[in-house]
Image (cartoon, rainbow, N blue to C red; front, side, top):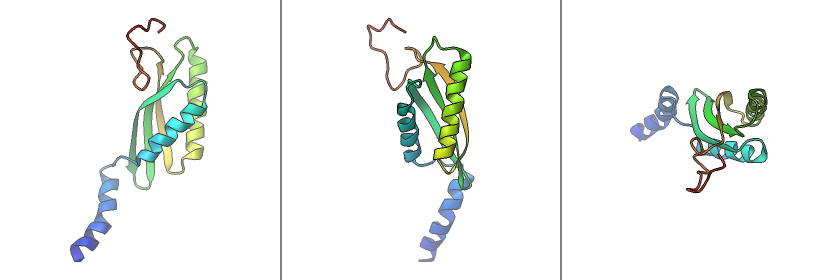
Length: 117
């Protein structure tokens, strides 16, 4: 009984110290919010880690390869602000912008006959 109580007390602290991955629900929420934005083609390589009672995120965000850098930056900043407002535990997000082309796509890979991108 003492060992069980010790484990229950120590386990959350160990997770915080080792920067354990956050819940998979965070990834689902990010994907859902991205699906709502017509300018975001795909989000992948989502990494989340806990530091204390907060969560840090980083991921790749794919946009139209013909889009201007300024437009892609604005989309990214708006998405980041939206996530920070919606996800209470998240305190910082690093987003890597990528073109939505065959080389970068992971979730929606190109078919063999894809010549568009």
